[in-house]
Length: 296
DNA sequence: ACAGGTCAAGGATAC
DNA sequence: GTATCCTTGACCTGT
Image 1 (cartoon, rainbow, N blue to C red):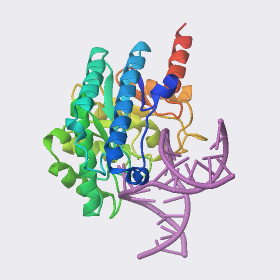
Image 2 (image 1 turned 120 degrees about the horizontal axis):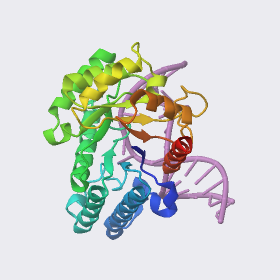
Image 3 (image 1 turned 180 degrees about the vertical axis):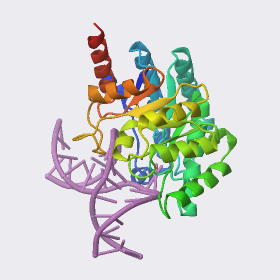
Image 4 (image 1 turned 90 degrees about the vertical axis):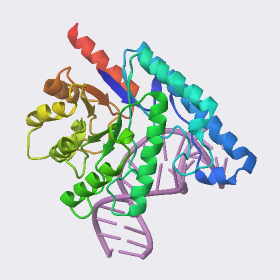
């Protein structure tokens, strides 16, 4: 199964999301602030539902939600959005759509979530980010939060220890949603696999990150271990093509078919594949069309 | 209407 | 310590 993240280009206006900057928010009159946040959040959740419908219609049953649907959620605490009847209603519709259409969903907190930071206040805010994602996840029925290990400060072994300590302090409800992904600069496939094995959590393999940041072991040799971390659930990998060359960290607009083929050769249908390309869903449609063409 | 600069947040690096 | 880049998509401001 193939999928994409966040924006759905095919849907044009209904496939993207609104937000507001802090500056603009603070410039609003007191009375208008909550109104603005709610209206943006409601629009965004409405669009999420549209995207799930589109996914099902196009046999794309893998989708990652944006982390930025409730504007300024991890910064402000004026609005208990998770108790707002409108928000609950829209979240319910998303949940129903995902379940009834069998779309496998996930979320991926961004670069500001650094559980293993050396700065206590960064760890605190990272936990806040996870609490936010967890709340939203529970409302829409998401069970997967993809994270990176984070900072390398102090050297990898120390940094990994900090991660383990922070992870063990998290709520069980959050812990059981977390899966770890290898990154393109520091923590390799092998590093993350070992950590996942120790923590008994699944590992998402990012094939492009592996090319940018390889380890000594061959990927082929690590696949069975990665598969085992999922304990019977279907594993998932991330796939993208470097913009200008294979180990270019920037993502290309589409996925080169040879990159898809190589990944498919490695794991076949045993893994779901999240395609990370600038053209989002269009890149998935493109690969699906080429697969079909090659079969005919 | 359009373009260019900006944005809440972290990390790494160079000085 | 401070400045600058990384990276992303939408906002925001000036024209």
